[in-house]
Image (tube, rainbow, N blue to C red; front, side, top):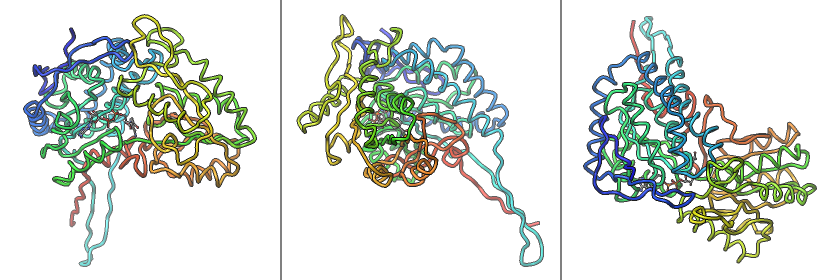
Length: 484
Ligand code: NAD
């Protein structure tokens, strides 16, 4: 039986209070996770605080950057270990994790090391009332101990997206991975130790949210800033905790993203793009499109083409060649998604394809599978069109004009992402300007340049991370005024 231990002050720590980690693909027990209590969270935060004052705080940027490069190299050297851990925890296709999760997990350390090494700060010179001169210059200093609370859908990638810039900026971190996916955060502890990152710089506490490690961490007064990716509702709870002590938060939250396909789009590319945005990672991507709007002249043809693509997706376990769709993360999440499938039927939706559980054989029958599902015919007021389902499903509705498409896209509390398919430049730029999101993809989806800003508007988040934007959250900018 594998034990997933906490990583505190450079040591792996058992607590004796454990919960099971199960495989989404066949529900087998992968191991026991040692839940951190207040004592362990306290120890982790204390270690992080001490490391700030110790060797990490005194380390030159050049040396820090060198260590972060070593972290990335060590992840790549242990690529197969990380890959095995990630697909065991998530059940996602190996091809996907090998292509996105693990390489990006490593890249996040190098990208932010480069940014911190190369980004300048501002300087101004001015004439003073006495006719003299004064010079101002800016210094960036770390914000302190950063609490990092993570979801389960892209565990290593989303965690390092925060830990990479936090460490590059000279902070120390206490990470609370999702209770569903404890493995890669734990493995990263081994990497930190192997390459010589000082003890206490990177800490991991396992457990749940309320009355557990997540709440203990975010309520801790010595946690100087909190970065969180997960559900909007959880963000509200964390924001309430962060209000005590007026501690800054960076939030990447839920979405109910619109995909818009204009009649002039490259049809095949649009179908391929929406197939990915609706079904990749079994629909468990915050950027995914659960609302698809298609211009009327191509509506029927588009629905049929997406149906064919959905039905051609091979459903299966991670290692099976050609698999395009894995399981949902947990039994609980499967029940939630199936609840929406049921509700669609009850509300009179046309089920274009899917709507149930696919037949699986042998041990895989115990996994949390659902069919890729497409609906049409629901009103915009339906819960299926308004609430984030986080499964491999979408509702497709027709529209006539650009105005109408933009109004439909904006008719939501969320504002994370959109994907727009058109060959008309003016239409593309108008959508980019008027759709209220943090991320707008034109003729593409989930194409990332890590130097660019990432984040959501409205109920989808607070702040931007990525490139130099991460520095706004992970550092304090100090102005120094020198009277000459
Ligand atoms: P979740 O909010 O349920 O859990 C996320 C993390 O928060 C977990 O580690 C959990 O243990 C912890 N947590 C829960 N309650 C807490 C509390 N009261 N205090 C402190 N910590 C607490 O989210 P999830 O189900 O793991 O992930 C799916 C959600 O994440 C979806 O809504 C998805 O849209 C969102 N997401 C957003 C982005 C983005 O970039 N905007 C990226 C990925 C996922």
